[in-house]
Length: 393
Image (cartoon, rainbow, N blue to C red; front, side, top):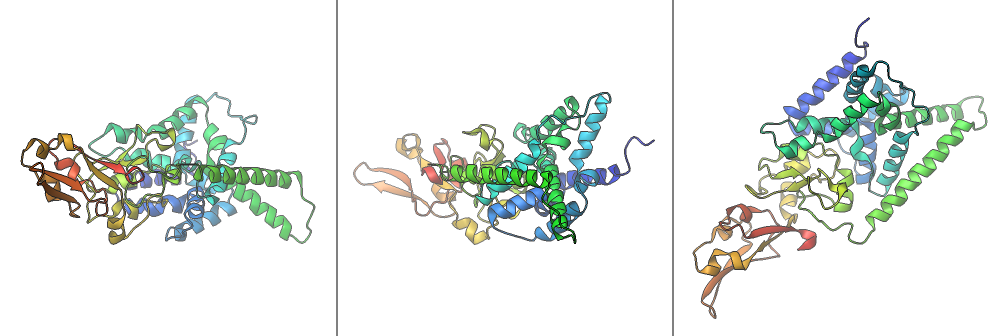
């Protein structure tokens, strides 16, 4: 008997394909592959962003496949499921009967889909393909601690699978649970269309109750969160085109595409967010470079719409934040010549002025012109320039 069942060949091939894509292929590949392969990711992002893009051409066949073949993706394609099964083999004598464990995955899927209706998909980042590609994508050279932190979600999942074999696939995975829900709906519609319709059974009523509570609960929680005072205010510097912070933390699945695609390497996963919901979400750091006016790659390669795919002109018109200069630390304040920030600003937003009263020169930021690109931050010799989020400017 083979160590792996025959279907593992497909899953191993998908694991190699996704790992290769996350490591070597252009990020645009994952932009279409992630929602194309994951019905959970596709449905929730389409509903949340109200936008159907090219990825629908890949997603609809997968949707049809999992409706026709219950858990077809899990059994034949899912690379994370293959890794979970390998972890389960380390505990050959473990009890894998989790009949008393609630269907947490189904509730997570329903709450997320309901939340997407209110534009806030609650548990989207639990999608296993996003966890996998985010972990593999963090393995780029040079290896940063911030990049390696993106592997934390997959690492926790695999450790859980050693301690409790197959618990993730059977009870926790929202992608697998969504396939179960689609299969149940398909069976329900088939019975309604049959020549001999029967009365609703207990299973149909149970599905209806779960759907009502899950979808309704997700919509209610998301609507309240989106409308909470200050929820949309940006607390971190996000890539240009990022949606409001209330939705960004949930719509972003931490796949790392924006980090990989940034030629300036200014996009970093946030390991010290103001709230736990923003953990590992992309933020901007202008320590060594700035947001190039010739680049809009982050939005063009985002698979979920957390960062809008803006044109180059629209991206440059988008305000990331506002530059602030600490006058007490500026070299001009101590009568030393310096105009590095004004010289490098691509928008001419930093203006050098001379005061006839004090006979000193000083620089100021034109708030109407500055878009917070960060070009002035890295070149400032005393490092007294910072960029604050647009919502705090």
